[in-house]
Image (cartoon, rainbow, N blue to C red):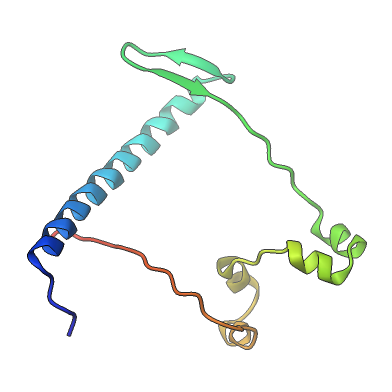
Length: 116
């Protein structure tokens, strides 16, 4: 049975829930509007609305040839640079096999709220 919530904690949970709902709705609205804006913006720059301005910038991400880097570096140096995500690993390795390579567990807290 979960611990009881104090009056203050209940108030904070409700405030957090309302803020979370507003944030999610705003993000969805922004994403939809961004999809409409994107084809209308031909190049980076600042575009003017009636009440707001929008600055569009672009950035490039370099794609590396991981295999050639692995061949070039010492094993220890290569491993110190590599960051493996569980999501990507699950695409290429069975869960039972992944579990054989787990060396520990990191605990992180996530808050998820829902309207009653």
